[in-house]
Image (tube, rainbow, N blue to C red; front, side, top):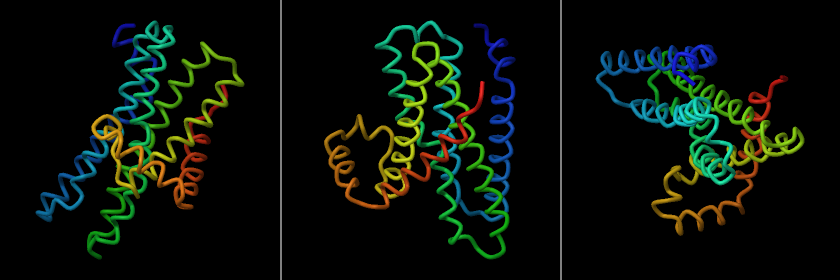
Length: 210
């Protein structure tokens, strides 16, 4: 598939994320310029991580034949799943609003909200694209089951990132420590609550009638 065909077929998704990213970054730069504070600079990095699942989904969409090989399909899906929680994770960055000054509270709320919405949509769009491909290889029943599992794993990934402070790449850089933290986290009710809430949110927003 040519790049222009890709842009045409996914124009709504690409344009929405592009405009959202540009506007969010402009507001962030404006805040830094006016205040001299780098307080919310981390939002730029979080947004970058959030866009990775969508970028990978677009790459798969452009090269659909590669998903025909089961082992490669599994590997790509696993990498995508490791980064997917980074997208809805930015929704939890609202916790930083308590550190915002009263004069900037409204501005910071809009700023974080824009970063969060753009990041969340990146996850939703990428989820939908991967579900499109799964329907080519599996029955509707299997795909629905996969969607539920993926959504819940995504919710659990948000818990690991926000509360356990794990990163997507920790699976590769420190696998033993990561595994221990994951096992230990299963004992906490917050882990199950966060998994369920964000899992349902991802499942509902990513599911659509064909």
